[in-house]
Length: 327
Image (cartoon, rainbow, N blue to C red; front, side):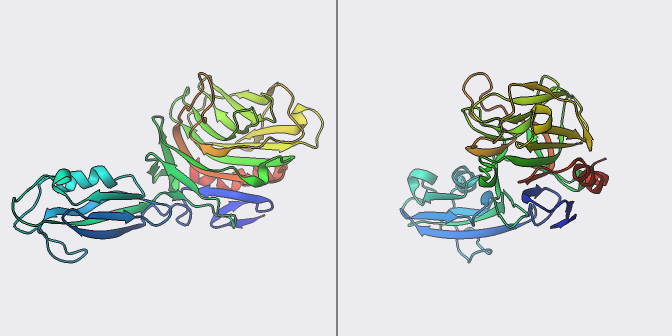
C-alpha cells in the first residue's frame, strides 16, 4: 500500500495514472506567452512548449505598432481585424504561421510600410502521467475541467477526448487491472476508456448507452463481460484480468464501488490480451460500422492502470482510500 503523487493507491504494478485533482497531473492554471514580429510580407511563426496549445491572443496589430513583448501598443496605423485574424490562425493549435501582409489583414494605411506585432498566450493540455513512465495523455478538442470533487475532466459528447499511445506493458499481457472514478451525465450517456484495436483486440470498459457496462479483453475475438448499470452518480469502476486463471468468471472480474459484480459473458476471455493501437478516454475509436468514433458525455476524476491482477482486498482498499472525494 502506498501513496502515488498525492493519490492514495496500491502502488505495486502501477504503470499509469492520471488524476484531474492533482496539480502535477493537470497544470490547469499553468500558462505562458510567446511574442513575435515581422515586417510587411514577412511571417510570424510561434510554437508552444510540448503539451500546450494557444488559447488566447493577448495582443495583435498589423500596422505600425510599437513597444516590446508584454508592452505592445498600437501606432497611428492599425488593422481593425488584427485580433480576430490572428485568433483564426493560432487558437487551439500548438504551432502556427501567419503572414504579415495586406492579403491577410487588409491595408489599413496605404503607402505606409507596415509590420505585425503579436503576443499569444498558451496553456498546457496534457494530463500528465503521475508514474515514472511519463505516458502523458493529450487533451483533444477542448476537454473541460470542473473544480467539483477536487477536480475532474469533463466530456461534452461532441468531439472532445483524451488519447495516448498504447501502454506497451499491457500489449499481450496475461494480467492487468484498470480503476477509474467516472460519472456519466445521463442514464443513457456513454463513458469509455479503452485501448482499442480494429481487430477485436481491445482492452477497456465502456459505460454504454444501453444501461450496461462492458468490460472487454480481446485478442482477435469479441470477448467481454457485461453488468447492468445506468447510474448517474460517481462510481469507482474496476476491471481485473488474470489470463492464467481458468474460465471467464475467474479470468475477468469487475467491481463497482469496491463490490464484485456478476458478469454476463460473450465469447471466451483469452489467456493473453491483444495489442492495442492507442488508448482513448472519451472516444470509442475508429471502428468500422455504426459504433465509429462515439464520444463520451460525463466526468473522469482519475484513472489507474496496473500490470497485474489486483485482489478483491486491494480494489476495496483503493475505493475506501479515495471515496471521500467523490461520495
